[in-house]
Image (cartoon, rainbow, N blue to C red; front, side):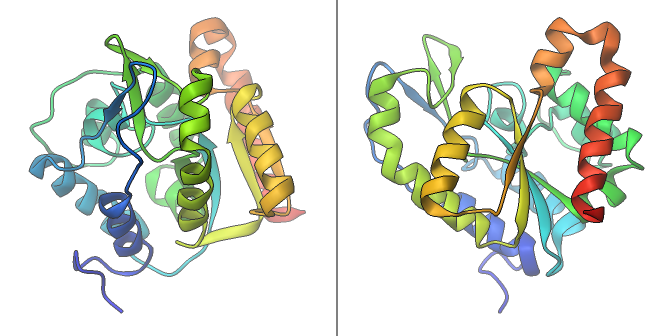
Length: 233
């Protein structure tokens, strides 16, 4: 069945999901919602991106971040994809403003290291436990940064994540992008709800670029080896 957005397969389901994802408002603790998806240009490039790379019924291994940030998905609507990467690596021209973002820089270095966008997106789906992002005082806020926000979103996080999995996840294994709180929360949720058979942690892309940039190739090799093992075990 074709989605209402006339995009095939996984792509259409994801676009329907992200546009129809309700969230309990208002948010507590001086938290603002980061929501670029109502902008025509954002949705145009999203539709082009997902139709190109996900216009099929193939299941993907999920790489799960925290939530969208102001300079990546908060601008383009596409996780870990800043405006420059969208054009330079994905070949999608646009009028969105913004430069490189640290997490996006690492992810697209990884994508090139793994054979390029077509090869990478054929096997993997980049997303986040919270599909929507947040700010407070003009800065990024993670869903777990505020106990009041986490409590407010707890049921929604589980329900929206289950909807993401139903889009076409390979249920055998998934990866947490982040070895700290995001992984601990994902693991706890997974033990309770059995989203995946196993979730494995990887260093967060921003952490690598902020604190281990001189060793980036070492972390690219780590990522590549771990992701390839997901297909060979």
